[in-house]
Image 1: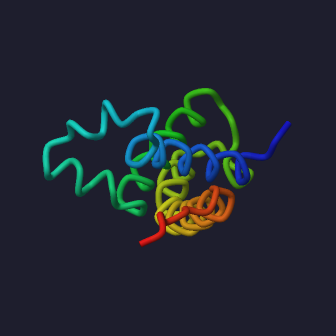
Image 2 (image 1 turned 45 degrees about the vertical axis):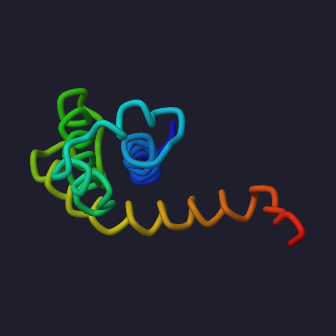
Length: 108
C-alpha cells in the first residue's frame, strides 16, 4: 500500500490543477466568481483545504497519516499541503511546458 505521505501530496496537486488550470475542467473554473477564482488560483490556499479534506477523509476511514490516526493528523495534513502543493504544482506545470510541442511562429 502506498504511504499517505506520498499519496496525499499528489492528490492535493491534482485537485488544485483540475480546479484551477486544466483544460478539461475549463467549463467549471472559467465561471468562478472573481473572489473564488483568486482563491482557487492560489496553490497554497486551495491546497490547505484539499489537505484538510484529505486528512479528514483519512481520519474517518482510519488511514494513518505520518503514522498516526489521531485528529491532529488532519491539521498536519492541511499545514503540510500549504508547502507541498505549490512546489509540486510548479514542477508539474514546468514538465507540461517542457513536454508540449514548440510553438512555430509564422514567417513575417
